[in-house]
Image (cartoon, rainbow, N blue to C red; front, side, top):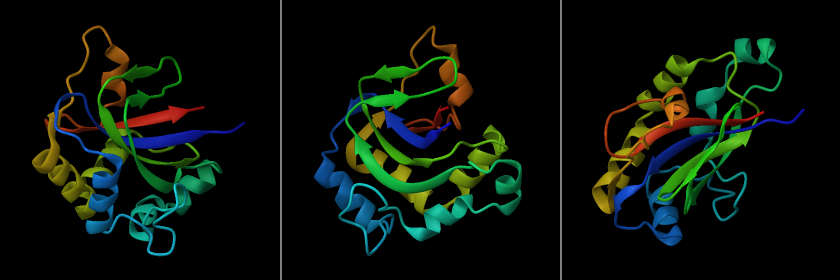
Length: 162
């Protein structure tokens, strides 16, 4: 069984970009890229961000615990879940890798993401430079289950393919 997961920072309304080059430059500026693999599509995530998920206890309980290794900009929003998927207009930053989030719950994920200075700066910079916000579609209750915060502007979601 293979699992793929991502932390997704998304906007789908009122965007002014970004292009892939603009996003890559922002990732570089904020120190989100691994210095050795920064030009690669996979394995390019900075070590201090991957370290947010170094949890020995979680790995004992789940030998396929989330191991983020890459960051990218996607030109559409895609959120995966065990029961339903959402694909829609907009764009998102994906911090992704193999594994899944169990045994962490949404509160633990939220705590890691919203307290990481580089990820806080990423969200603020995206909003400042490119505008935008995520407007939750009506009648898509499963999105609320994947929402990690509702701070306005670009929103963080958990995405898992089991």
